[in-house]
Amino acid sequence: MEYSATSKYVRVGTRKVRLIADAIRTMSPHRALTYLDAMGKSAARPVAGVIRSALANAKEKLAKTDSLT
Image (tube, rainbow, N blue to C red; front, side, top):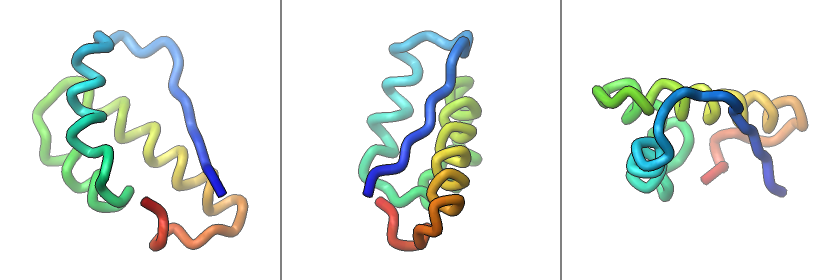
């Protein structure tokens, strides 16, 4: 099953966000959050918020968040 989250009206350029998204695309959510916390990019904070929101949505639907990719 697919879980999603979006963030609107973020004042960060799409090219900057795309660089961050490409770097974490294949990681598990927990590893990606650790990576984003250590990253010094301005776009890392909004992307981490979206990942946290998607994890919360998955937990709400009773999914095991350990097995998400």
